[in-house]
Each structure stands twice: as C-alpha cells, then as structure tokens.
Length: 152
Image (cartoon, rainbow, N blue to C red; front, top):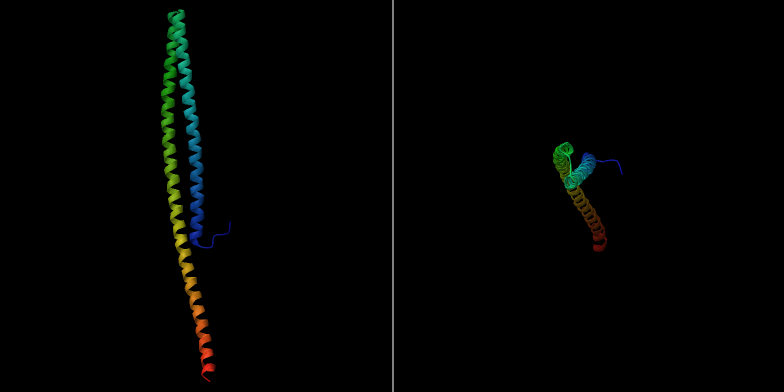
C-alpha cells in the first residue's frame, strides 16, 4: 500500500482500519454468541436427560429423599437454564451493537470513498480540459505559422 498523499486518503485509511476493527469485534461477539448458545443447548439436553432419569426412577420406585434430591437438582438446572438464556440474550444484544458499529464504520468509509471518486473524476475532467486546451493551442499555433507562408 502506498503512503497517503492527501488528507482524504488518510481519512480513508483510518476509516478502513476502524471498519476492519469493528468487523473483528463483531466476529468475536458472534463467536461468543455461538458458544453461549451451545452451552444453553447442552444444559437443556442435560436437564432433559436428568428429568427422564427421574421418570424412570419413579417407575422403578424411588424413596422420598431421593425424589427430593432429584427435584432440587432439576430446580438448580432450571435456574442455570434461566441464567444461560439471560446470558444469551445479553450476548445477542452485544452482537447487535457490534453489528451497528460495523455498519456505521462501513457507511463512513463509503462516504469517504465517494468523495475520493468525485475528486478523481474532477481531476480527470480538469486534465482532459487542459489536454484539450494544449491540443487546441498547438493546432492554432500551427495554423498561424502555416498561413503566412501559404499567402506568400
């Protein structure tokens, strides 16, 4: 990459870096969301398996103390599931915030890119006009030089 030649080029570079950093943060938040969702899913499966064990134990016959222990453990699993759902909701909110930040940085970069394109178009038009003037001057100069010799 070349060194920035104008303040706009510097702004574009900084905006690109900010957008890339926001993208990395978003990717990290999404990875965390997948992990939290996976933990919630695992906990839900474990709770289901444990409830099935309790049902089997009840069919086989279970004493009241063991029944209370099963029920207390299921209650603690339900509490853990509730906390895991809250953690997932909070993580999803962080993903949303990170996504909004990335989109904001992308819009800023797009704005600078648009300005740079306009500047390049203006410079190109200016160069074309200058080239046309130079060409016209050369043609006029040749015409002026050839006219006196053709009138002689």
